[in-house]
Length: 188
Ligand SMILES: [Zn+2]
Ligand SMILES: [Zn+2]
Image (cartoon, rainbow, N blue to C red):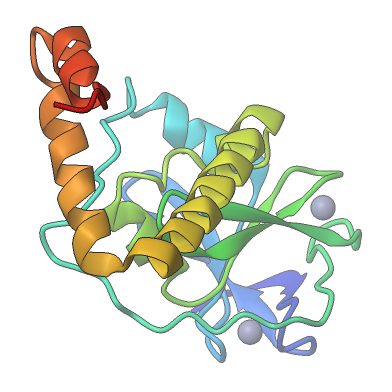
């Protein structure tokens, strides 16, 4: 594997290599930790060659429960040396994406690309750092926390039951009337 001048932000002294992660996507992998550096130039070139984004996959056909090891210590951009910012991916993905806020490059720890790809999120790396995406992640987290409070109160079985009833009502052509019946608490 040919070497580039870039060093791995995790292994520090290990020079990153040169390789193609996908057809048309040039990256700089670390042979030691399995992470990859994607320069913004290479990322955008690849993205532009792909056409419209495919729909996000909520549940991949082949579940990717590959381990992702994330360091809590700060990482620095292999290209410009600035601090890499961590952005929660959300959408059921449990790791954060490292991105250089200065040059816009991405660092992916080992397995992260495969997991993102299984969900069609690998071509949305540039969105993950956006306020809109992060706002949505925060909203999903609040929703999850709220659901946990309800779950603690009424129990998993009843929660699942009421959720399935809600899905049924929401998809019903006369949902307003169904809600009216459901909420009608008059004594009979
Ligand atoms: Zn490394
Ligand atoms: Zn940078």
